[in-house]
Image (cartoon, rainbow, N blue to C red; front, side, top):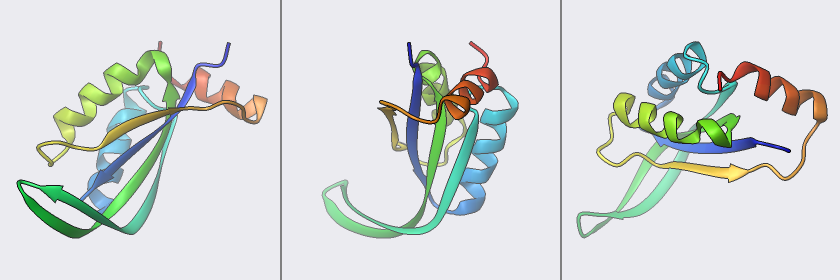
Length: 106
């Protein structure tokens, strides 16, 4: 059964997300994190519509580790309410999917 999920997390900049990603990889909570620098986020916060430059992190882990990943991101993240979303991976390269699973400590 495929347990791999992709996760999304935004942050104020590339450096913050890379720092978080290194911790999550070191702790074997995720297999990897890709950081896309300079995305624009439009959202409502405390009654105001905001538009901010952010970075986007795309992480790969397993569904069974998603709760631990989300908890650790909340501990490390500078935002009061960080975006942490998990999306099931329906299919993928079998060797890559196996690698993700092997990298994550269940």
